[in-house]
Image (cartoon, rainbow, N blue to C red; front, side):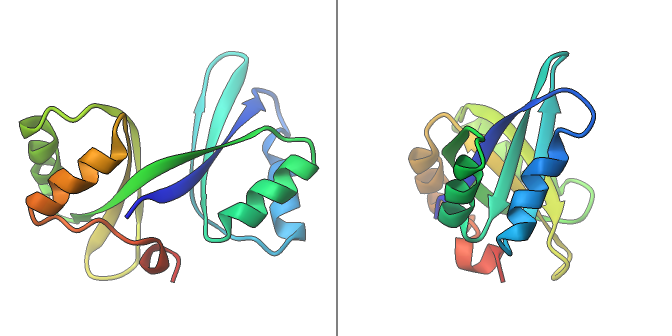
Length: 142
């Protein structure tokens, strides 16, 4: 299952994240996880939010430019080599990873790796063939 991720450009200066989070708070929207990558002048804030359509709508209404991308969330066993096992499959099929980030899920000794692949639908098919089940949105946002 593909998960919708919101991406926003954020000016790289103090206080830039607060207005985004305030809009989400004011609209009762909760962030499951986020990633922030920066350069000298701007950053890219990536968000996973259950009600992503509403989040996109209210953020755009507040003047933010929001891009929606498909990402794949995969479980990673939380032990030494857990990520290496997953990356072995990615290497085997030469999947192109644009970026990835992780967060803990709080159950089953499992972390979650979020991947942006150049072809996410193909990546899902490969993981299915390798008996690696992607995390579906309704399970991610429980």
